[in-house]
Length: 163
Image 1 (tube, rainbow, N blue to C red):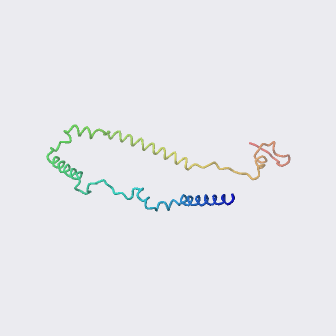
Image 2: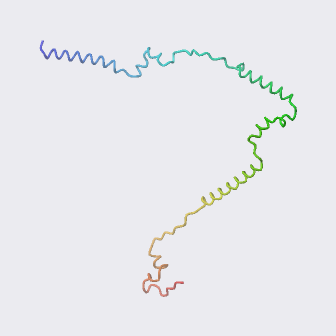
Image 3: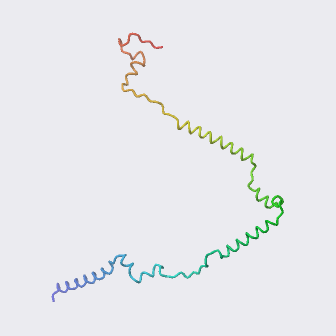
């Protein structure tokens, strides 16, 4: 066996090994996701071990709500008629954010005046027109007819009066 034949066999063997390992490495990502051993990695197949209470109106919060409502209505029936005026805690809580109606009237009046001023200014600015600009095709017209008498050529006008 010659040296070239041995080298050719070794290179062919190396190419075969590279092709075999390259084919395994060149798998598509979508085909890898379809393997059986990949399905359990996402957590979709596991059961939920948490135990949740049964939902419905028999839950403790609804029971407590009904009991508190019945107690509140029962207590309200036995209270005297003037309990709101005599209860300083309830009165203080109710008057906490209270403001005199006169103050609200003044604020509303001032707000109305400011709104009217803003509307008036907006009407003026939205209804404004740009000044009309007269464009002359012949620019020398102004110099000859409305300009200085010194710009009028001799003999073009008999009487040149400027008042």
